[in-house]
Image (cartoon, rainbow, N blue to C red; front, top):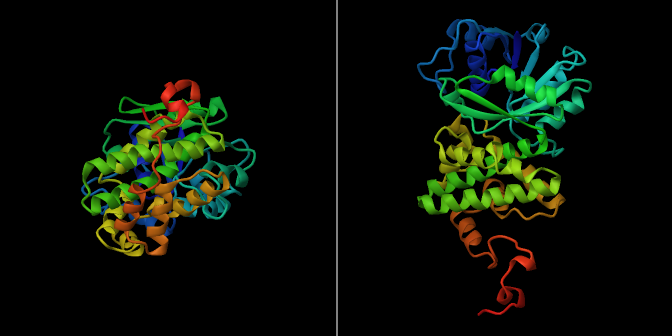
Length: 346
């Protein structure tokens, strides 16, 4: 089976390596001829994967038609800010009925569209899916155990992607809840920036646990309003992805947050990280969705103020801690003891 990878960043090359180890004929499309030639010669991304060589069987090209020719699966793996332009460029060479799966996480700021929604709008008549979960490229590229979710409204597509990717160290589940899978994978990046800021300010583990817990509450509240399933947000692509992104030093979003918590600007932090920080691009979109669906996202709102309005991170956390007092979770009146229903304090 031939598989095409659109993109040559760290995540794209981790996936390409996994698929090549499974014995597939893998062709990677690089954004420039020079990068295709460099990868062919060097088989590495030294800054991200020091000391690691990609499988020799992987081939590289800058020719779009050559990249997808005869591919039974086309994997979109470019950073989210470049999905639309890349998809438009490939629309003429990806024929009707072709299978396309995105492994990118992010919400488009101007349109508030998810990655699948972008692909569906630009590639009508193709079979689209998403692959998302707690999967750091630095671990996948070395073959460490990983679990992930293949989501598509087309059951056959979800199971096809599952069959392609699954191995003894890469377990794949399926889901029909594409929106839930994508929202979990996108919105958690914003919360991870907040968790990184807390680390950068030296606030310890307690507040990180709170940010993760209240973060999934925020994500779930919005996702449910938008039509996603609660079970999805409680699974790998929701709480699972949030935990790993908030806790791991492999996380670019957490790294950027740490630098901002230490006093650097958003621009300085992104430059030092040296790769696309997806949460920065999704933060404004998340806030816009919050307002569109009338669902408060207090952590996300404060992250936006810090990133784009110059607000001090210490002051933002203080305001989060001093918000109006409330119950942790919502209950129906039937679930409450009598004294809670009546408003009595005894």
